Image (cartoon, rainbow, N blue to C red; front, top):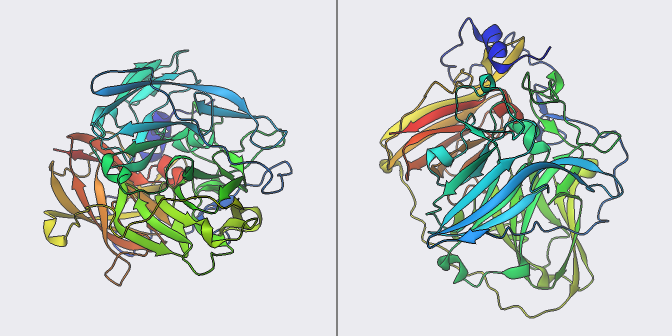
Length: 529
């Protein structure tokens, strides 16, 4: 018999939970993490590798697919209207093998939505899957009722029991999301955010790009058109028959949430996909390209580098972060990218010889996960793009801007359910009826965050963040520039983050974007008042 989440929590949490875990404490039940509770250091990520049951293809055999740009069904004076159907479909992800995906419009990744700053984007989502879904526009400055709160679900058109709605809003078969998008040009993405089941739903394919464009960015003469390429990087494992392999406690996603004990720290696949293709190849001209890097993996972090590096130049010129352009370009030889982070970078292939093959590698990976994709320089071509020394007017927040300071600890411990030690924030598991912070509209707060047990990428909805300091040196890390919605912290890491709560009142969430941690309750509410 399947156990509902209500029963799961009632059995495990009837005795209450700790309200706060002091700095330095590790509350993990007996103090010993179950199997899978530690860090898989060989992969550089929190989690356990799940091996595929079939032989994986050799790398660099398939071309890089580019997700199609969704066309509006109609335009009005101030808005563009779209329709997306969430449905099951068959896809050839591995050559010659059929895989069932849950896709936006039946494809993985979903279609790319492109918006213009200042024009409303209205998206009607129809749910033809067998379970409820929630759509979150990650990075969107969005009214609370359209943000994709974890219990504001779209019931499948086939019907759903109201008792499984957890007290949230339950739309019947379809829901319309409205995005004002009064925010700078940026690489956003949309994905499922259903309470307790985000991990398996995203793993099955519910993710896509949403790009915001504006006049300021287009005036910079950055690489554009076919040389502006979105790259959604994920890892997956496959069963013997080609299905996505994911260790759910309830594979139907209709009962008990979570994963098998060995994967409580995260599910790491053994096959790297880019835009849904295994280790693909992109032919490029000897010109500059803009790559919109998105780590859409459940638990895997990457350290990206070019092999060979370009002679006489820097591998990556970063021009944008999660929420838009940087003030000035930042040069990197490699990039650490955690789950849900975005890096907009320019690569200058004119530094390579025609015919040269350049591999995007993952220095944190092993075997197949040590490679991501390959570029082949095919010919010389004209290039009128450039990377200016000044990109955008980004007002830096300062410590004096903050009116409130909060301290938050992300770790495994402080609560148990059904014999499992949960992932928590300040020792408390997620409760949709509890609000843990009430920032004032328009205010700036300083959040001091620390992580224990394993690495955690921390994502705050609605707010624009800037990293004030990380670690003990009092400065941001090398990959923390710009406006952020997700901050990557190592095991035992600490950060000070300045957050501006602007735009809308209402209840939102912040959580770890290791999706197995999020599903096992490492999430909290804040309400903008």
